[in-house]
Image (cartoon, rainbow, N blue to C red; front, side, top):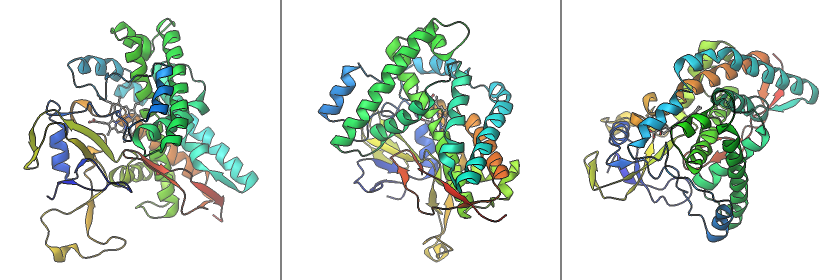
Length: 388
Ligand code: HEM
């Protein structure tokens, strides 16, 4: 089967048709009529009755609007959302991103000096992406700690494997997020100036549709970046990447380390599609309704090589190559609208952190990781002060 196979993913048996070959992944992403994104926001673990009732109590709903929209309305809505993240708008944010990154890095340095240790996820990776996203969308910058918690809880509820008790907790959090969001949407459509929710309202979207988009974007638009930064900082401090911690204080080196992490263990390693009809991909018949898991990042066996060429090399059982960088943000009509922003933010934050904390040394080499179907990152990156 080679490139399309039923495989176990993580610890649980995988119900997906897993596609790993980059060419097959690209092919599927470019055939949205046959391979629909309608399952993009469906819970990986079916939500059980008690948790569902919590969600229903706040009229929680995620109608298809953008990432999971396979109808003709997608293009117009994408245009409205994309207008908030144009290359010019993203580039103009660089000084603001740098200002926030420097302040956060200085605070982390202070914490390291005072207490001898700091968690770089909380001190530098978590909040700058959230502030930048809200500012770009024209939305009020508030309730950031709650927003971070809601984002993580919702990722686990929709992309993780929570048991019933955990689902109930997570559903309570998702319901809180959704209620907050509906209030924000109501407030924003009547607010002066330009903001995303007002623009979507003017485009003709209903409040549940705007809430659905907001629910996805307020998570996708910042937590994925936080997680990319967390993994990049962790691998730099661990010393397992192509760039050293000292070198990362230089912008080009920081950027190349961010690209390395995107290509090898991005915060969004997979994404889903569902076949809308009987179809063929990578030479294999795929029945209508098949749930497909596309591997966007990671490592692959080198195609066309003989077994003897796949001799073990340092740290790997077989010789492998990183996924083509071009798939990391998806491809085709649903390609990520935040790619440019993410690269900029991650580069600047990593650079400013490495520059402000030359003495930082990794304290915890085996932190807990977020390991959901489509999201991954270390939960903490704890450093101590070593000798420079
Ligand atoms: C490390 C950071 C990020 C990664 C790896 C990432 C990855 C992805 C992927 C794989 C998709 C699905 C693409 C497809 O279906 O073809 C996607 C969609 C999307 N992403 Fe990102 N993303 C990141 C950050 C962001 C940020 C910062 C924003 C917003 C500022 C954003 C906004 C979106 C939107 C709006 C979509 C849906 C686009 C559509 O359906 O037309 N993402 N992203």
